[in-house]
Image (cartoon, helix red, strand yellow):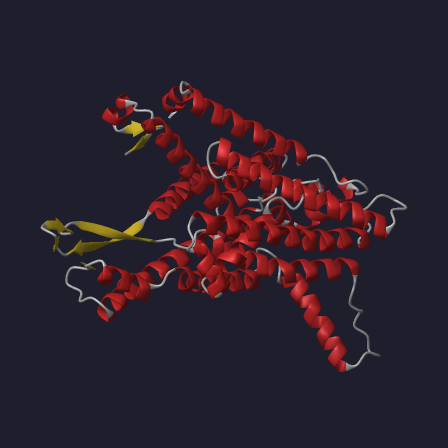
Length: 453
């Protein structure tokens, strides 16, 4: 792999793209350390430490920027949310679907709508976040609400738009997909801190049993990473055969191909949706318990009010990241969103109809409804496997943290799926640039950057 990277730097254009990507990531990491004017960074960091696993999880996707409440505190999360929402609306709204089918022009319109949606979501999220910080007393003394809200909302929204612009520049002038590269850079930036915390806890603890977790965590990280790569690249190949057609004396068709059905078709979207939905009540209950928003049970209160207060306290104590009820609800939501997302983006009936129009068929399966039923049955089994895999990836860090006491977000979940997916995609792009410039030696060896073709 090192030899492949050195050879990649010998190509002037590829070297320029790699250096541009490195420079853009440096700018992103620099902005993650510049706090929003008027905020108390140390107080915000203390609150995130009190939140435990939830605080580490929320901060991981922004590379620690949210924990420091920097100008990039929202990261590219509003852009991701806008893209996901729009992708779910396109199959439902005929007008959006018609725009998407216009080709390059339609893609530009969709991107423009996504940008406007990003601005709206960034403003809403910055307003809510800034208001909570001010009401919790996490700002500088004598900071007026209206002035802090104005400065904070403008700064956070501008930071998100700048990151969106920077991601687009990486896509055009750098390597990889820009937004994905920024997310991966933020996640990887937090890995040394997690590992440093584990090392500090082990070296400052007299219990020798905790030291045994170091080799266990390293071995699990390697095994889980290999498993993620296998599942992310795994696909069920359905054989497709095209009938021969004679048009004006020429023979068309008659060749065989395959339809790749991905094992993990939804990627990280089901985990993101499940985590986002659970983060709202979890943050509300924990913040409410910390600020004592609800009254204290008393004999003078009506019975229904004491019951409601007891329920809120129970949810605040048990609906936390890593608790049993949290993991149960998270698993059910991941299964639901896996099937829901697949039903929106993948239509077996349209696929079967297109195959029939172009003279294609699955050997042993009749065209039409039998083909649709066959594809649906295969897809249902793959979705179950993919959903089970996503549940395992989402629960593994929580289970390891509960057993070992260490913050093990790097062992699974959304972070590892994103890092592996973006890493594999980036390597493929580098290989494509190298092969495009006719490096016959690489083709003859059949390997580039340590991977086999």
